[in-house]
Image (tube, rainbow, N blue to C red; front, side, top):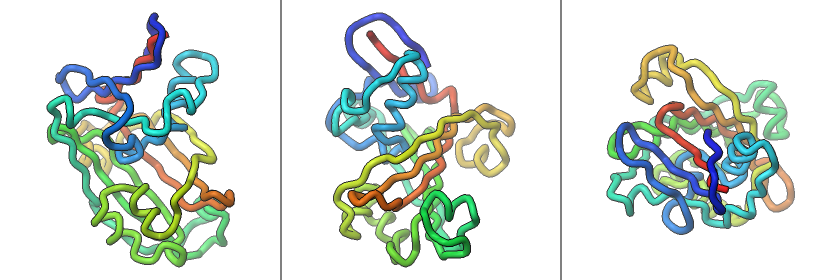
Length: 212
């Protein structure tokens, strides 16, 4: 994270040694990279040292990697139905042991992995979530298929971690490399948690720049 002089908020994604790409309105949602508008605001707040309102970033905070000549892609790596543990149950406001759908996703730019993300949803409320996500390649569009047209971020927790074997393999980094980890909970219009996610970024491939 870096705070620099200027007058506007700008965000750049760095892919390997490619030129930095400025993010703005239009294009694909940052949610498709595993980062929501409120998460981005949290990153900016941490860098600037004072609150940065998510509304300033606009409804469609987006990345223009494709328009900048980068080949952007993503895929569902794997999925499973499993019983949620106490921590997941607390985040989703359901009973421990309730079946949840787990989606493992990976996003690339120019074939360079940017983000590995795990999302959990209540399997009863979102039956067949994995197949819907696989066909839409978007959390937002997947939720729309289930009738959730409006949702927002309830909480975001940003930490650092060391890459273990599974994440190192997906992100193509060495075991032990630093990762940026974003844990979040999203709620529907009635305030009911609908999903919780844990996204891992290779720290040297994502750069957030604030121009003020």
